[in-house]
Amino acid sequence: MKLIKRIIGRILFILGKAIYIILDSIISLIENLVVLVGGLFKGCLVLMSMGGCLFFILFINLGFKILVDSFGLYAILLLFMFLLFGGKFASYLKYLKYVVTEYLFNTANYLKDDKNYKYKAFFEFRAAYIKAEEDRIREQQRRYYEQQRAWEEQFRQQWYYQSFNGQGNGNYSQGSFGQDYMSSHAAFRNKYERSCDILGVPYDADRSQIKSAYRKKAKEFHPDLNKAPDSTKIFQEITAAHEFLNDKNIELYKNNKN
Image (cartoon, rainbow, N blue to C red):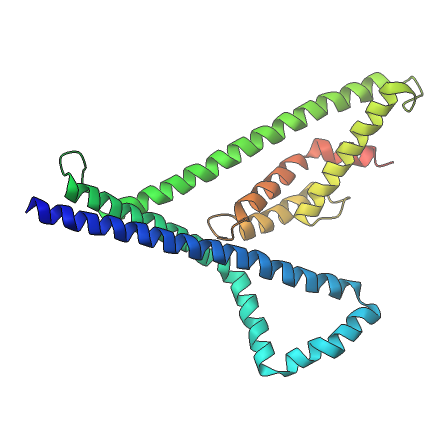
């Protein structure tokens, strides 16, 4: 009986390894294709934004033929659907890879050596995966926010020190102090305007506009709702931009636009 259990355990272990390798290869392929298709569509949008004769000629010679041809139209629709759902499908396969293979490995070890291994049901690995993903996202966000706050605090101290100590001397642009001030001023403007670009608001937006744009973006790219490979990174950038565009920095930007 023990020999049979060990043989079955060995088969399950080999099966788990095979599933792991196959799913891992499929996931890598899908993620690379999503990046490739996304780059293709971005390139088309760039050409569209250029407008003029170049876009007109390309549309007449190539685009119109593709749209008229049913195969070309289906191919474009298929690529667009793949771009929308490819990332979510890859995320689901990652979940499936972890749960199935870990269950098979655990069952295999239990059958080969039930004294040192405890049998775990399938749903236990599903719950473990969800918890591990939540912990991973929280840890990424914690590290990202700590880096952002450290940078912003360092910059804010430098900015206010230079602003208050520079008042009254009538000359910000001479010497190393003036260079540091101008560098700090440019860094603040760049970060402020980049934060506005991330949220899609104008540079003179007020706090209510910023909050409204943040809520829309956060809902669109929240990792629990958007399973694209880069949704977590985008969500972190959106949150960091919202935190940076606070009332104090809005006032500081408007008072120092020139």
